[in-house]
Image 1 (cartoon, rainbow, N blue to C red):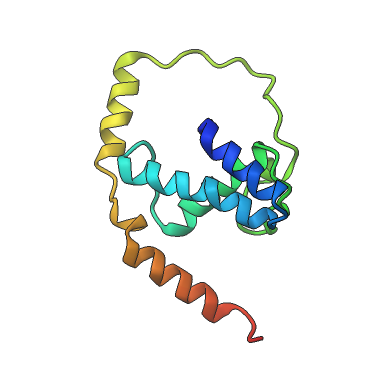
Image 2 (cartoon, rainbow, N blue to C red):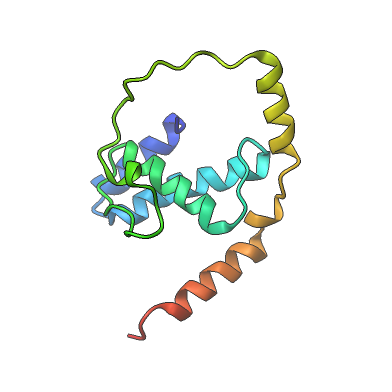
Length: 128
């Protein structure tokens, strides 16, 4: 669940006439912070970005669906609530998973890793 301020900033960006991808950037920034804090684990900058974009789509930011090969079919469909009921996770399991996430590498979303990712993506883009 994204933070209230993130959703508000994204909506303000849309009202200001900025593109949906700019508005979704707030969610990506929040996700990168979560990885750095150890709330989530991400094995690459792309994974952190994908999680942020997925949250933006769920929050109602009008982004294009993910490309065919990269994501699961479930994220391409309209994300609604699942029909299955999920039981609450036990305290021990929750604590264990939190400890495991804390040990995940933070270097995947470091300044240099994000810079490296941005440069490689820019290289793949067509020249203007």
